[in-house]
Image 1: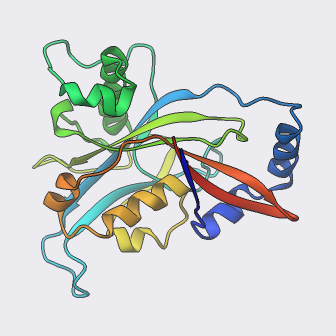
Image 2 (image 1 turned 120 degrees about the vertical axis):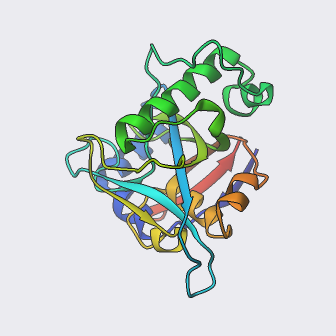
Length: 240
């Protein structure tokens, strides 16, 4: 396991550095409370190429983001990728043969869990962005686990896909009040949670969808944590 400081900017301090979190962190360090169990979740990084390269030389890659409504219990007001928790009936059609390596990369070697994760990814992309994906259009992207101090925790597998030709992404459900295509660089200026910020930092190095989809990435689970640092917090990322 490795750890490194990860100061992902104001999104960390403004979203999580609260008196309630401070109290929970102290209680957890004292052994008075234990971490809640995570729920499996899937997130889709939906990308496309702009019609022409940007004048600043950063390429053509664009990514689709949603802004969660201010009343949401988790991630209120944050810009996120389409996604959500894995539901009991999520499943990929039995006729679809998913790549064997995906089970190890995203599901701890459990092929049935993998099919549920991919099924959730396809369903959530349709529900939240109005885009219908073929499961085989997806590629593993990243794996993030919510910090142990949080009261709502998700074990989230990120997948990436190019939007299919002829389809349009929309804001398709009531959990989000805005949907937009932006360059990764512009997306980094929005209000983000650390996994979204890290994903956009990765994509900012990719000129177009071919590079973004073909890039070799690590799929080790990332578990951020908060440490007390004087009167405040220090945010640290751990690779498990």
